[in-house]
Amino acid sequence: MKIVFLVLFAAASIAHLYFSWKDDKRGRAVTKPFLLLFLALYYVFSVDKISLVLLFALLTSWLGDVLLIPKGHKWFSAGGVSFMVSHFLFIAVYIERISFAEVLWLPVIVAALVYCIVAAKIISMVWKTTPRLMRAVMYIYLLANSAMNVFALMQLLSTGTLGAVIAYIGAVLFFVSDCSLFLVRYYKPRKIVYKDHFTVMLTYILGELLITQGIIMLTI
Image 1: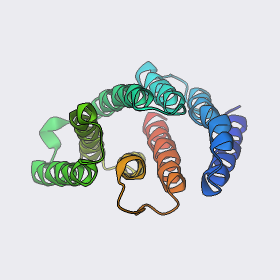
Image 2: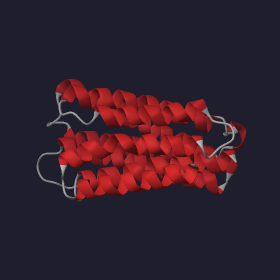
Image 3: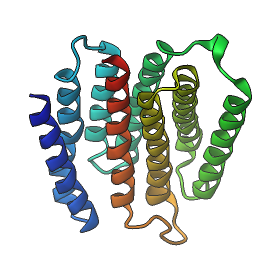
Protein backbone atom coordinates (compact mmCIF):
# COMPACT_ATOMS: atom_id res chain seq x y z
CA MET A 1 0.00 0.00 0.00
CA LYS A 2 2.85 2.41 0.67
CA ILE A 3 3.82 2.34 -3.02
CA VAL A 4 0.21 3.07 -3.98
CA PHE A 5 0.06 6.16 -1.77
CA LEU A 6 3.52 7.30 -2.87
CA VAL A 7 2.38 7.10 -6.50
CA LEU A 8 -0.82 8.98 -5.62
CA PHE A 9 1.26 11.61 -3.83
CA ALA A 10 3.52 11.94 -6.86
CA ALA A 11 0.54 12.21 -9.23
CA ALA A 12 -1.17 14.84 -7.08
CA SER A 13 2.11 16.75 -6.76
CA ILE A 14 2.75 16.75 -10.52
CA ALA A 15 -0.81 17.90 -11.19
CA HIS A 16 -0.58 20.65 -8.58
CA LEU A 17 2.79 21.84 -9.87
CA TYR A 18 1.40 21.91 -13.41
CA PHE A 19 -1.50 24.09 -12.29
CA SER A 20 0.93 26.26 -10.31
CA TRP A 21 3.12 26.69 -13.40
CA LYS A 22 0.06 27.70 -15.42
CA ASP A 23 -1.18 29.91 -12.56
CA ASP A 24 -4.49 28.01 -12.64
CA LYS A 25 -6.03 28.95 -9.29
CA ARG A 26 -8.91 26.52 -9.58
CA GLY A 27 -6.63 23.60 -10.43
CA ARG A 28 -4.35 24.47 -7.53
CA ALA A 29 -7.31 24.62 -5.14
CA VAL A 30 -8.64 21.24 -6.28
CA THR A 31 -5.32 19.36 -6.04
CA LYS A 32 -3.81 20.97 -2.94
CA PRO A 33 -5.86 19.09 -0.30
CA PHE A 34 -4.62 15.73 -1.60
CA LEU A 35 -0.89 16.41 -1.23
CA LEU A 36 -0.31 15.96 2.51
CA LEU A 37 -3.19 13.50 2.79
CA PHE A 38 -1.45 11.04 0.47
CA LEU A 39 1.94 11.76 2.08
CA ALA A 40 0.53 11.02 5.54
CA LEU A 41 -0.94 7.74 4.29
CA TYR A 42 2.39 6.87 2.67
CA TYR A 43 4.05 7.37 6.04
CA VAL A 44 1.45 5.29 7.89
CA PHE A 45 2.03 2.30 5.61
CA SER A 46 5.83 2.67 5.58
CA VAL A 47 6.55 2.02 9.25
CA ASP A 48 5.69 -0.71 11.72
CA LYS A 49 5.24 1.71 14.61
CA ILE A 50 3.55 5.00 13.76
CA SER A 51 4.75 8.17 15.45
CA LEU A 52 1.57 10.03 16.30
CA VAL A 53 3.61 13.20 16.69
CA LEU A 54 4.88 13.01 13.11
CA LEU A 55 1.44 12.02 11.85
CA PHE A 56 -0.12 15.05 13.54
CA ALA A 57 2.69 17.22 12.12
CA LEU A 58 1.69 16.09 8.64
CA LEU A 59 -2.01 16.53 9.37
CA THR A 60 -1.56 20.06 10.72
CA SER A 61 0.43 20.82 7.58
CA TRP A 62 -2.49 19.44 5.58
CA LEU A 63 -4.86 21.69 7.53
CA GLY A 64 -2.57 24.63 6.83
CA ASP A 65 -2.75 23.84 3.11
CA VAL A 66 -6.54 23.81 3.21
CA LEU A 67 -6.76 27.04 5.21
CA LEU A 68 -4.50 28.84 2.74
CA ILE A 69 -6.77 28.08 -0.22
CA PRO A 70 -9.36 30.86 0.39
CA LYS A 71 -8.27 34.45 -0.12
CA GLY A 72 -7.92 36.90 2.75
CA HIS A 73 -5.53 37.84 5.54
CA LYS A 74 -7.58 35.93 8.15
CA TRP A 75 -7.31 32.67 6.20
CA PHE A 76 -3.59 33.29 5.64
CA SER A 77 -3.11 33.84 9.38
CA ALA A 78 -5.14 30.72 10.27
CA GLY A 79 -3.06 28.65 7.87
CA GLY A 80 0.09 30.09 9.39
CA VAL A 81 -0.98 29.08 12.89
CA SER A 82 -1.64 25.53 11.72
CA PHE A 83 1.78 25.34 10.06
CA MET A 84 3.41 26.78 13.18
CA VAL A 85 1.93 23.92 15.18
CA SER A 86 3.34 21.49 12.61
CA HIS A 87 6.82 23.03 13.04
CA PHE A 88 6.73 22.46 16.80
CA LEU A 89 5.54 18.90 16.23
CA PHE A 90 8.43 18.29 13.83
CA ILE A 91 10.76 19.64 16.52
CA ALA A 92 9.30 17.11 18.97
CA VAL A 93 10.04 14.36 16.45
CA TYR A 94 13.65 15.49 16.04
CA ILE A 95 14.26 15.82 19.78
CA GLU A 96 13.68 12.07 20.21
CA ARG A 97 16.90 11.45 18.26
CA ILE A 98 19.07 14.29 19.54
CA SER A 99 21.85 13.62 22.02
CA PHE A 100 22.46 17.14 23.28
CA ALA A 101 25.73 16.09 24.95
CA GLU A 102 27.15 15.14 21.54
CA VAL A 103 25.96 18.17 19.59
CA LEU A 104 28.62 20.52 18.21
CA TRP A 105 27.18 23.82 19.36
CA LEU A 106 29.25 26.22 17.25
CA PRO A 107 27.67 25.21 13.90
CA VAL A 108 24.25 25.13 15.58
CA ILE A 109 24.65 28.68 16.91
CA VAL A 110 25.97 29.93 13.56
CA ALA A 111 23.08 28.26 11.72
CA ALA A 112 20.54 29.74 14.15
CA LEU A 113 21.95 33.23 13.58
CA VAL A 114 21.85 32.77 9.80
CA TYR A 115 18.21 31.65 9.90
CA CYS A 116 17.24 34.60 12.13
CA ILE A 117 19.01 37.05 9.82
CA VAL A 118 17.34 35.62 6.72
CA ALA A 119 13.94 35.68 8.46
CA ALA A 120 14.49 39.31 9.47
CA LYS A 121 15.52 40.21 5.91
CA ILE A 122 12.40 38.62 4.43
CA ILE A 123 10.15 40.45 6.89
CA SER A 124 11.93 43.75 6.18
CA MET A 125 11.28 43.27 2.46
CA VAL A 126 7.53 42.88 2.96
CA TRP A 127 7.16 45.19 5.97
CA LYS A 128 5.53 48.13 4.21
CA THR A 129 3.06 46.05 2.22
CA THR A 130 2.05 43.68 5.03
CA PRO A 131 -0.94 44.49 7.28
CA ARG A 132 0.36 45.92 10.54
CA LEU A 133 -1.23 43.26 12.74
CA MET A 134 0.40 40.47 10.72
CA ARG A 135 4.00 41.70 10.77
CA ALA A 136 5.02 40.36 14.18
CA VAL A 137 3.06 37.14 13.65
CA MET A 138 4.78 36.48 10.33
CA TYR A 139 8.21 37.05 11.87
CA ILE A 140 7.41 34.73 14.78
CA TYR A 141 6.25 32.15 12.26
CA LEU A 142 9.52 32.31 10.32
CA LEU A 143 11.42 32.01 13.60
CA ALA A 144 9.39 28.86 14.38
CA ASN A 145 10.39 27.44 10.99
CA SER A 146 13.98 28.48 11.73
CA ALA A 147 13.84 26.62 15.05
CA MET A 148 12.51 23.54 13.27
CA ASN A 149 15.51 23.73 10.92
CA VAL A 150 17.98 24.14 13.77
CA PHE A 151 16.61 21.07 15.56
CA ALA A 152 16.77 19.13 12.28
CA LEU A 153 20.43 20.15 12.09
CA MET A 154 21.02 18.97 15.66
CA GLN A 155 19.41 15.64 14.77
CA LEU A 156 21.86 15.40 11.88
CA LEU A 157 24.85 16.25 14.06
CA SER A 158 23.71 13.73 16.69
CA THR A 159 23.05 10.77 14.40
CA GLY A 160 25.15 11.44 11.31
CA THR A 161 22.84 9.20 9.29
CA LEU A 162 21.55 9.48 5.73
CA GLY A 163 18.00 9.74 7.04
CA ALA A 164 18.95 12.76 9.15
CA VAL A 165 20.66 14.37 6.14
CA ILE A 166 17.53 13.91 4.04
CA ALA A 167 15.29 15.27 6.81
CA TYR A 168 17.50 18.35 7.19
CA ILE A 169 17.46 19.04 3.45
CA GLY A 170 13.68 18.79 3.66
CA ALA A 171 13.61 21.29 6.52
CA VAL A 172 15.74 23.74 4.53
CA LEU A 173 13.40 23.44 1.54
CA PHE A 174 10.42 24.08 3.84
CA PHE A 175 12.13 27.27 5.03
CA VAL A 176 12.82 28.36 1.45
CA SER A 177 9.18 27.68 0.59
CA ASP A 178 7.87 29.85 3.43
CA CYS A 179 10.25 32.70 2.59
CA SER A 180 9.17 32.48 -1.05
CA LEU A 181 5.49 32.47 -0.06
CA PHE A 182 5.87 35.67 1.95
CA LEU A 183 7.57 37.35 -1.01
CA VAL A 184 4.91 36.13 -3.44
CA ARG A 185 2.09 37.31 -1.20
CA TYR A 186 3.41 40.62 0.09
CA TYR A 187 6.45 41.86 -1.87
CA LYS A 188 4.96 44.45 -4.21
CA PRO A 189 7.69 46.42 -6.07
CA ARG A 190 8.25 43.56 -8.53
CA LYS A 191 8.05 39.81 -8.81
CA ILE A 192 11.28 38.25 -7.58
CA VAL A 193 10.20 34.63 -7.07
CA TYR A 194 10.41 32.51 -10.20
CA LYS A 195 6.95 31.42 -11.33
CA ASP A 196 5.49 32.52 -7.99
CA HIS A 197 3.47 29.65 -6.50
CA PHE A 198 5.30 27.03 -8.57
CA THR A 199 8.52 27.71 -6.67
CA VAL A 200 6.64 27.93 -3.37
CA MET A 201 4.95 24.58 -3.87
CA LEU A 202 7.91 22.77 -5.46
CA THR A 203 10.11 23.51 -2.45
CA TYR A 204 7.23 22.82 -0.05
CA ILE A 205 6.29 19.46 -1.56
CA LEU A 206 9.90 18.30 -1.70
CA GLY A 207 10.48 19.60 1.82
CA GLU A 208 7.57 17.70 3.35
CA LEU A 209 8.47 14.56 1.39
CA LEU A 210 12.13 14.61 2.41
CA ILE A 211 11.35 15.29 6.07
CA THR A 212 8.92 12.37 6.08
CA GLN A 213 11.25 10.05 4.16
CA GLY A 214 14.16 10.98 6.40
CA ILE A 215 12.20 10.10 9.54
CA ILE A 216 11.04 6.85 7.94
CA MET A 217 14.69 5.94 7.31
CA LEU A 218 15.57 6.82 10.89
CA THR A 219 12.69 4.68 12.16
CA ILE A 220 13.26 1.50 10.16
